[in-house]
Length: 263
Image (cartoon, rainbow, N blue to C red; front, side, top):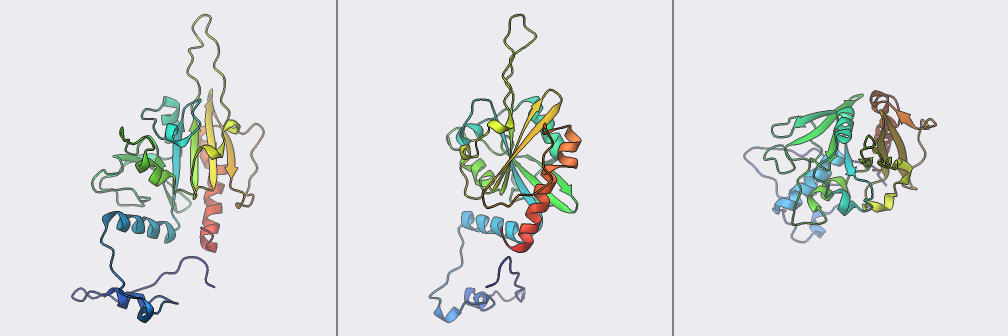
């Protein structure tokens, strides 16, 4: 049995369109004579999903979900309904990569629309050792007031193998006389079952405490351990969070699994 992605080159002539049966003859293990009346798919939504799947399977570039979570939220419907984010979250996005205008974007798009702003105007993009990474940021994807589940946001983030969850801290004014200091929300307080997805295997959970980022990583039981181990305490400055530790190793781990045909 063959594992992993198979790439098939089809003959192309500008003045002669291939039929569906002619295309099927190039697929190993498929006998076109036994396939009754195969039809070309014209539904725009299905074509869009198939192009997204092709992009996921056929490249060594990656797309990560980034979810903004407020204290007290414990389900993806609540998290994906956040419209405005804190300055700490905006600073974190600057750590992850550069904000890019999607319309007219000509590099790896991670399934986002680059023609008509259908998936938002901006996203966050970076490169790591030759791998292009597009982040699906929850607050930058389109928000729907009529859809409590935020299906459009969930369609992208829920299909990402890796989700980065940024937990914001309580915003009590500690300078006010008599104010109670806010409780710190640690990444280890996160529960992966709060986000429903069949495809997300890794959650990298981050929060900002004073001037440092604290990180915890949750993996599906099918994901073998990968290094390096987190320091104790698992705190990083902005450049070391992305520059030297766990988030890059997530990329390297995914790249290996992509080559082995596991994802």
